[in-house]
Length: 358
Ligand code: TXA
Ligand code: MG
Image (cartoon, rainbow, N blue to C red; front, side, top):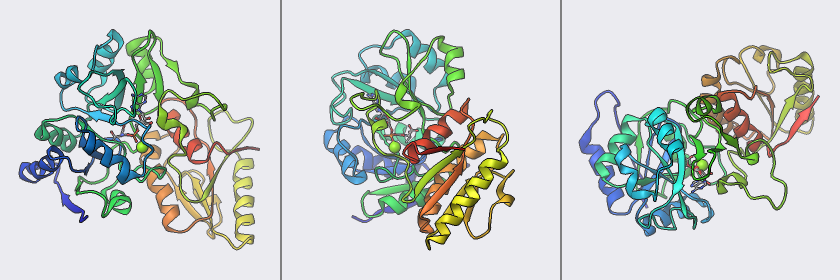
C-alpha cells in the first residue's frame, strides 16, 4: 500500500485536503492525524472491518480496545447507553481536551472497536485538524496512538511515517503535537470514577470537578499476577524503546533537585555500558545535563519544573535513542504529582518498572 502524506497549515485549514482524508475514513480506510496529545491512527469506529485494519497495521492484540473520537458533545449519545452524572460534569469541564471517558456502549458500536468489552472509550480532541477531520468524515473515528504496538507514541508525523509507511492510506501532517503524552482515561461506569491512565487532565483537576476519584492500582506499579488492569492496554509492554531503560532514584528523594548520588550512579552505569563496548544513553534535565560525560548520548527533556516541556519531549527522546542504536538508557526520575504522574507512568512502563534506588 502506498501511504500518502499531506501537510495541513493550522492557520489556514484547507478543507479540500481534509475532505480527501475524511472520504478515506468514510470508505473504511486508515488515516493518521494529529491530536493535541499524540498522533492517532483513525478508522471508522462503527465499521468492524475498518477497525480490524487498525489492529493489523499496529500489530495490536485484538483484546486491546480503541478510543472513539467525536467532534461535538451531541455525537456521544448514540455511542453509549447512558451518561452518568460524573461523566457529564467531567465532559462539561474538559471537552474538548485530553480526557477519555469509559461509558457502557450502545449496540451501534461493534465489539471489534471495544476489544470485546461492553464499554466504549470516547474522547473529543482539542485539535483543530482532528476536530475538522472528524466533523467532515461525519462518523466517530476510532484512533489509537499511531505507533507500532509497543513503541513510543508518535508526537510528529515523521514518527508516524517511521512506523506506518506502507501500512495505511494517508498521514495528515499538522506539525508537532502540543502535549506529547496520551489522554487521561477515566472510567465513569461505576459509583466512583476511576482513573485508568494519567494524562494532562490531572487527578488534582478531576477531583476538583468530580469529587472522589479512585486510582487503578495498575497505574502505580507492576501488576501482581492474576490481577487484570481495567484498561486492557495497560498490561502490555508499552512506550518502550529497544534499549534497556533503568530509572535511578535517590531513596531519600523529596521530589526536588536530583542528588549528587543519582548523578554519580548514572555516570558509573554509563561507563560500565561503554566498557562492554556498548552505547549508553542518559535522560536528564537542563539542570544536570552538563554533569554527564560527553561519551554518552545525553538527552535533556527540559527544565525540571516545566513539566509540560518534559512531557512534550519524552517520546521523541525515546525514539531518538532507538535511531542512534543506544543499548542502555539511564534516566533521572521525575516527581509524581500533576502532569508528573503521567510522565512517571510512561517512563516506568517504558523501563518495565526497573527502578534502581540508591
Ligand atoms: O491521547 C490519546 O488518547 C490518543 C489520541 C490518538 O487520542 N489515543 C490513544 O489510544 O492513546 P491508545 O489506543 O493508544 O490507548 C487507549 C487506551 C488503551 O490502554 C486501552 O486499553 C484503553 O485506552 N481503553 C480503550 N477502551 C477501553 C475500555 N472500553 N475500557 C477500558 N480501557 C479502554
Ligand atoms: Mg497507544
